[in-house]
Length: 167
Image (cartoon, rainbow, N blue to C red; front, top):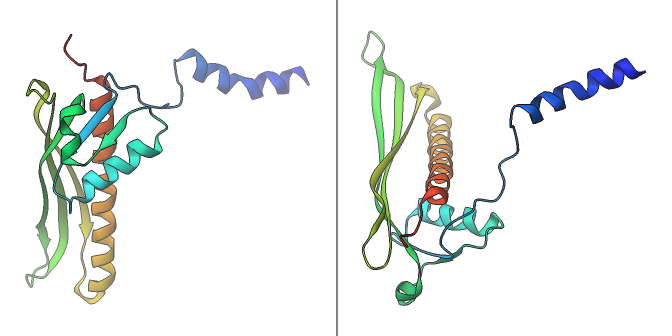
């Protein structure tokens, strides 16, 4: 019986010993954030939803009238989606695509001091393509872009959590 207990607890002890822990609520050095992005930006909406749902004390503002009262401003400078043909068959039909999502952003104080200079994050996914399955491939492409956007939002959160306000 002791042997079984020991074997059951061994993986947990190894994980604790290596420093593994679940990712918790991000800790930000600022208490309010203004997201400067077009109203149609899906990435900005997802960033706001993710921060609001994380349980963090960070207050996210999108109203321009609140800009003077915030501690940090994230400027979403550009969001660019690309669809590139990377493979064709002998008759010239598309067989493989590469999807890319590029986001440029910067984090600054309302006074203009850069906390994170202009930075580009890029995600890319490869997918096969078949003209006879065009509708399902279109849905797959939309899902891939959503997944890339979620990955980029998670990267943004990690970068925001290490940014420090100047003293």
